[in-house]
Image (cartoon, rainbow, N blue to C red; front, top):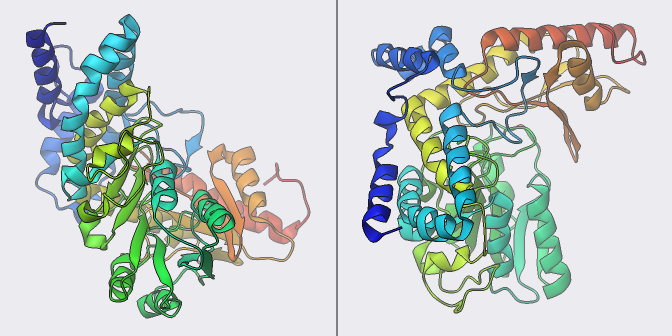
Length: 445
């Protein structure tokens, strides 16, 4: 392809902005209806719109989710809306016309515009953003790239993500660093307790603190900035796992006081599966070694963390559509809706006998992720998960780890309150049935 044609292609990519996300010469009905809903919604505040089921119904029509089940495990991997799916498929077809040409010479040229757009919604410099495959890759790049030596201490919690904990354990085994473990009592609405739990663990040997912004097990939002400030006062580097917070609720990465940060984009941003982001504060880039070696690992260029080799460019470039869809809804609208949905079902089950909630309903301590369990001897979290699936075709996941037990419920913007009413009915019936038949089969109400 000539330089002129290549320039024309990139200009076309750039032109696919939020304003053109839903427009085309053959605009389908769902798109026209959503466009009308968005125009009507401009007169409402995000708080008012959070409970407007008509508006969110049109958001739901942007997805191709199965009508045969209710997916309430969006925290694991979220589906992409139609425009994102279509973009990924279009770029995939393009790659297969001549892979090395269209991947390396065409689609890869869209990486810098994408980097700038990701940096814009992250609130940081594009020179601090590297594109990765998921949060685990981003965070393990940091964990294995930090110049730590035997005896250096790292503070982390038993409630952090397993891949992160395992990476630190491997560094402990290989390099002789010391891991200082916290066992947090969650859920908590006590900021002082959460901050002091970390601050008290800091010593003169502490070099790094690992923080999870939103605990994936139960949706606890941690006071990351306050902990980071306490760490920086002692010269301690701060790593933040933002896998469950990015595009879930509003903040910028600099707001967190993070030196290093990793997230997945296939969770709350609803990008296609297999793409994430690594953030490294500009002055920290030079001394952090990449996981995949570039020609010079000591460069202070963020791009040194992107030497993966051949990768799915069609997935990366579809992220642009995910950003457009996210901004079309509006960050504050999305945050308010997710908080509303979590509190909607929790309010309806919190007074059921033996039901125990494992997530705060207060803004700032919890948002869209919720944990629920039946607190009776002999009843396991998996019992409720299986009961909901067998009887209501509600897809969830159970947690039975350390001191956190329950079924994790994670709605998304396409989830309706009618679906949550079915969840509430299922929890009611499970509690009633299990109270009467503690050891009965799980496929009966």
